[in-house]
Image (tube, rainbow, N blue to C red; front, side, top):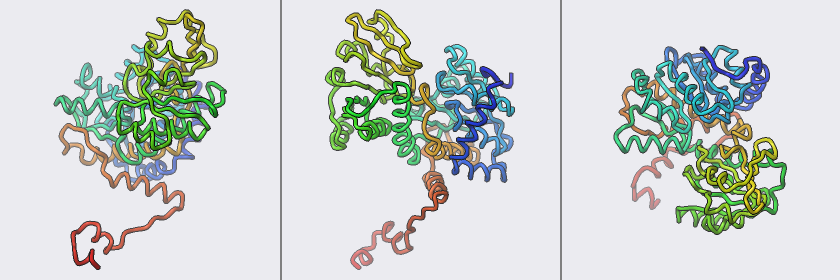
Length: 420
């Protein structure tokens, strides 16, 4: 099949979503104009595994403008928006994504997307990478390289690299400045709280919010919680990040201590078993738990279910786990990415920068990928600078430029010049 979507008749609604996103993604639009004019991706097959929603659709359409054949699938079974998937299918794109797909169907869709034998891949969380290094190795024969969108996926790739098993060059787009500074911090911060507030319809001000993990995403979640009037507690395993959280004005404690304090918990660590049966018995009645890490393993839901006498849906995307003592522990979006499984994900303007980086990363690999050995590579700084410059240009903002003398001063050790 050219596509696998829930209902092709949902396409008109998805088309409107894509148009709204596109109208608010000017940097990617500018790159799309250049792609359409020059067709730098002509003849290339690109497989994409990213959350299937409107901003991703605009990225996929941009790659098509560049001349590429694109196949698209999701990277999380609960983040797919069926109307957006239908809209892309109606336009003739190869897309394999259904909201709520069971594990077998989800992996099947990944395999269908890879079946084009891609020259290039865009991965989000490393699902493509896992298949291409195990059951689908035969699909790497034409592979030039790939790019990775998120922290979890980059970690997976670096492990493969360290073990000498990585099969292709991979660009760590997640580590680019325009990605982790804006997407991970401001994008995650806003989209997580937009989803929590929409799902619960509860006030944030006055509540105690526990943020598990103080990486870039955790910093964004904590920042926005504080801005909404919450008391913020941070848990960490890294003493330096814990000190940073203290100096940002947040309270710091271990999870055993925080378990009894929080009204809302948000895990943002990229690790498993952050909240477990060691913590559930200490939590308040009515507590709200959610996850903003890539996989649904940060809150141990199997342990929570085992300690519960009933599990009920109390609002859309909210499950109440009633404990033997009558306390209710609420889980948002089944413990999956709350901002995507329970909302629309990052704002369009944020994803404009991130997906502009992805488009330029694909172009970079298309141009020089065959000269690179398997490994994890940083995105060239000039691509970061170009994306930021395009955004400033769109906003009609200008910045200063070093004079030749200033550039020389910064780049050279010249005692006479320094003294003068």
